[in-house]
Length: 491
Image (cartoon, rainbow, N blue to C red; front, side):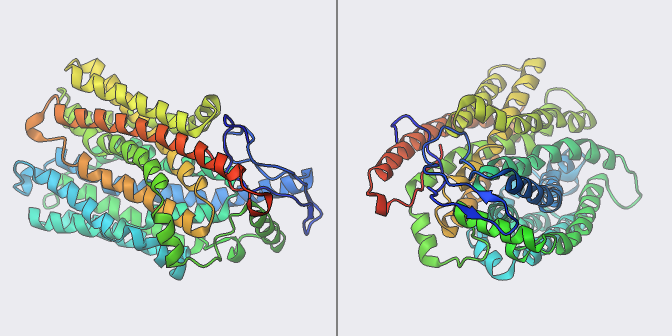
């Protein structure tokens, strides 16, 4: 392999296989080292290619579409506390100083408490049972936030909400890697993360409308929690019928499609759904410093997204807008983020690599943060907030899929990459929850300066990861042919 070629996470394949329906998976002598932005697809004849497209459409319309809807509710339930703050939560619960920041931080504590173990549980219980159950649990806890009377009760509920939600995003990422071929995974993961800005676009105006409900006993902020939680429970119950564990046991696939995709993913090296997840393989994957370095970029992206999700209404409110206007306008940076995620795949193709696309997204968020801290001019700060959302969410359209695809040697590597991606992203909540302080309004210099540092750190992490992957790929290429399994890192 040339030192300048882009690594492919695809295995070297040397075979000609005729599948059960007559479609030929053509012989390819070397799928490694091509300059595709995603792992190279196994070459298929027209009939087999049509079968693969039909299979992917089925998975898109069922598992991916449902995952996006449930994740929209997940993000909305998580961020609803930001809207509740604007309509009386703090005053009614007698919260002072940084009590609100403590509440948002405690969610992260609960979330991280079980995160790294969640995929072991998923492999034993099955995604079709575990993930809908988590949805019901966090929906109930979200609704119960609407009946609390003290800030201590709110603190307890935030911990329980985090514990109920942990495992959902990691589990979805893992089962997407079970169902989709490598060359389809990054784009599908990006579509899944589209749910995050869409949740903000929808929940801002929705919560604004809910907060105008007047009731003699139920306050406006209580309506936000109760109704959003109730909607989540209803949608989560559908998951018991929609979600599947892996292609081999999928109820909505025909036998023909099952045989084809199993054979395809065996050649693709990603048939992980029915494989055993051992602790020793997991420990070995966790010891890879390169994976940790990759997820530093994810940490930075999620810090930017967290700033937009939870604190955008407050930042906009401090610019002189009313609470209702701030809730509605908080959808603007998320709308920019949604467009950025849709264009993330195109950005990767234009840049020619994942690491460069991630660096560009981080630089965009960096510019937005600089604009936010440099001036109190309202139009400039709104533009800065939109750039922060654009860069942060664009990275979510690229980084998680890259993390999993580039670390797909075994099911343990995929599981650890998915768990660590979500773990590091969630850990960013510790920072995002504690740097936007009430006494620092309206400039919020500490919060935006912190984001400047994190975006810069993320860019460095992308560059280091690129250099490391290139070095490792050159080492793989120098191996004797009998020892080379064809795996290469995609960067």
